[in-house]
Image 1: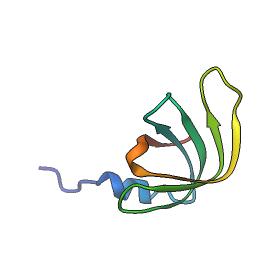
Image 2 (image 1 turned 45 degrees about the vertical axis):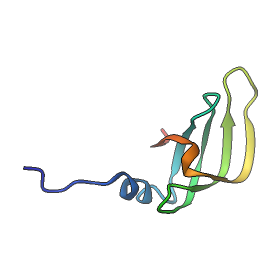
Image 3 (image 1 turned 120 degrees about the vertical axis):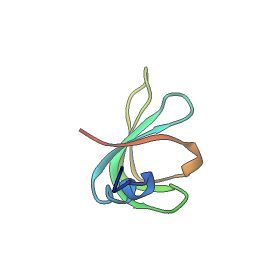
Image 4 (image 1 turned 90 degrees about the vertical axis):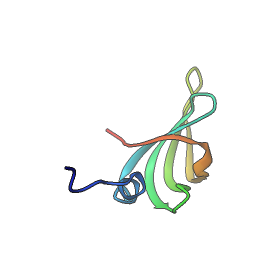
Length: 78
């Protein structure tokens, strides 16, 4: 019997103030930056984000808000 189940939203909340990797549903685009805030809809606010698109130069963004509907995955950055 499983005694403790960790919900995905709680895992994402635990990543606040750490560096994360966010994969977007379209164009295989990813962002790597510091997670500042997240809400119950999985909307995320990241700062000092690097936008990575295969075949293109990386772009630096000071602050981004990404809508939860557009997120494919969120993971701690290595």
